[in-house]
Length: 307
Image 1 (cartoon, rainbow, N blue to C red):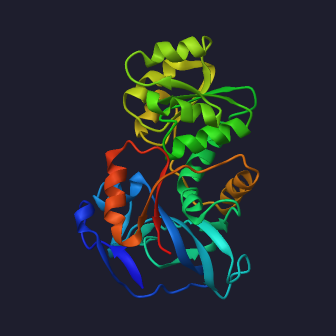
Image 2 (cartoon, helix red, strand yellow):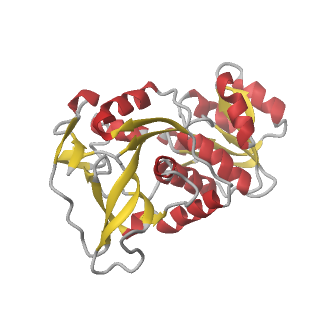
């Protein structure tokens, strides 16, 4: 099969479009014919070696954790899916090697759920990692109806989904973003606020008594000022910066979870959750997709179309 691989850590230039052997299908896995994958910042960070202390890399590595596709074959122990089923998945294992930037991927059933029928394959591929990150972080924050939630970097791939999920929980959402994305955030139901100097004052003007929860998706200065924006008893979580623990908050690293992924599918099919696709690249041009992600200013998700 055709796949994108890299044989050593590095930037986009180490990626190759090449032939690799077809995946083996274990007893609790299914073979997915990939229709689309999605790019996440973690993909190029892993490729650069930034996560080497936490994840072993078995070279050559096929990158990618997000997938939307069609089941071709099921393992002998699988009852959840059948050939022909359309699925989505956050196909993360405890090492990196067998990713989704390929024509086929063998995916453990614990990483999969039914694809939302109303989303294209490119849209659906952008849902698993980003959607699960937002969903699990908001539930870690125990967001409930009537609360006010501040989402840093609300127009990004995770942020836009976090805004929508928080709204389904009945929360009021304040989202930080550049001014060019404010109308987009309003369309999702958030109150936009510009980031940068004076952010704390702008948030306090919108929530004079403080916000009930802060979800940080960017780290750095945005995270540092977050504790002062919380109401008494407010909660703080970050998916971007481990320094949150020292500030009394929680660090969230997304986990594959079929039940959570199914909940996202149901939200999408209810029309409560949409996925913004910023750009689509063919598989052979995955390096360009990663370069765009590395620029860090993309609104929504970057998809790779496999066919």
